[in-house]
Image (cartoon, rainbow, N blue to C red; front, top):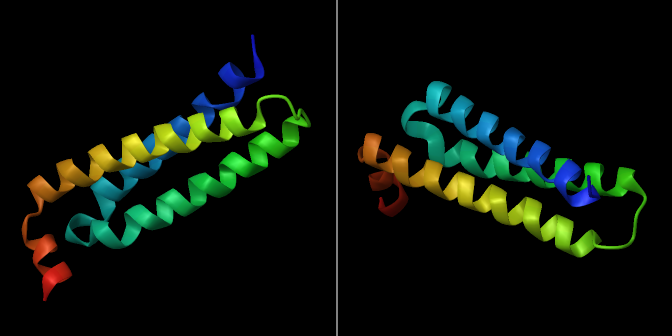
Amino acid sequence: MSARSRSVPPVWLAALLGAVLVGVFAGDRFLTWIPVVAAAVLLLTFVIQLSLQRKEGLVNRILASVGGTLVILGVTTVVLSLLHPDSLGRLFA
């Protein structure tokens, strides 16, 4: 099992867990909490990647982790925007 296949999925799972928690608890304030989840997952990415102590493929592993996180949180934002359309009005008010 490569370092990529061991180090990237935990980050994606953390992003998915954070997205679900935001969806359940944040309600129409989800636009405040999605960036917080993104920041936490980015820090988790660096912690995991630097703990591997392998230089080879570091950038690719970080890109895979962050890219997957952006997809997960992007889909979450779209879904929550459809569920809470009034929350988008605060962006332009």
